[in-house]
Amino acid sequence: MARKSFSHLECSVANTVELLGDAWSVLILRDAFLGVRRFEGFVESLGIARNTLTDRLDRLVESGLMEAVPYQERPLRHEYRLTEMGKDLFDVMMALYSFGERWQPGGAADRFRAIHVDCGNEGHATVHCSHCGERLTRRNVRLEPKVPAAETSSA
Image (cartoon, rainbow, N blue to C red; front, side, top):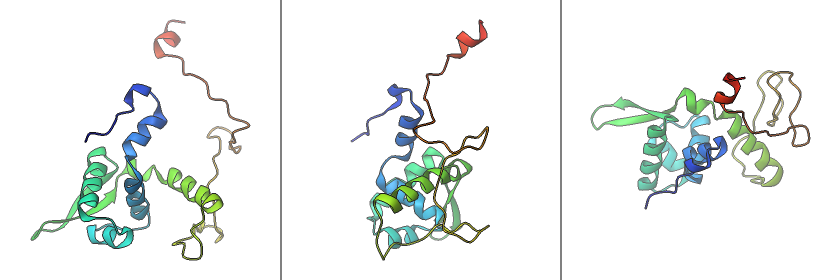
């Protein structure tokens, strides 16, 4: 069954959700950020069915978030590595991690902590203005419609 497309919404959030696909894809990306590269590593870490993993890896490669790099010829086997596009999801993954730590903690068996290498302390995601560096919150951000390029060039 084909998945519903969100492209008609003309929204970057909807486009990103469509690109990510589903929860399995997000968890595969999480494991890729944690250093998992090989098919068996994903199976072991996630407990995912092999056919489901094959499907999700194929989608992630097709979408450009990961690349399949051969590491063995007979039989042909691949490592799955994040592309530059995939690596750009780091901030999103950190935001999901920080939200989960606050609202859906995994308990004593939680798998990892995010340690900021420069200071040695556990870090959590925050969003800052790329212009002035101030922290962005729902109280100090206003979302406005973009002015179409045709309107700005005729002024």
